[in-house]
Image (cartoon, rainbow, N blue to C red; front, side, top):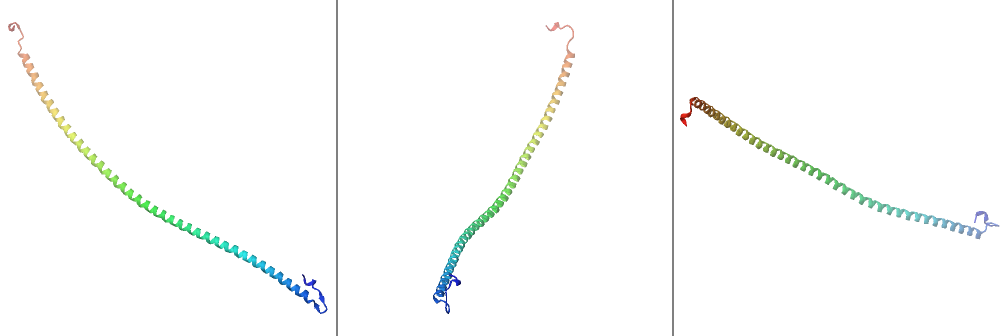
Length: 163
């Protein structure tokens, strides 16, 4: 109902029309207020649901962040442990390399000493062989002289006497 629809009486608008108009207006306002409150309640409900969802998502993200931080800490610890292990392995490798070099150096020195002993023995053998050859040469020369002397002493004539 509109204000133009109110019936007028002698002294102005009729009471029952005004009351009806006010009642309808009140009902209309109440209806609009209820609808508005209902929408506000629905909006608040959606907002609360969204807040709960966001809080739940926030908790999940915090848990995930804590897990990632834990993983980061584990990775950092593993990297530090790997570095320490690598340094230890490097030191161990260097020590074993040095030990191997020392062992090879000692073996080379032993082999060199043995070669020097062989060289000395070869020199001794050479000297002994040279001395023996010189003695043989002297003996051979003496025998050749004896053969020559004996050859000169042989009778040259008739050898029938000795038959």
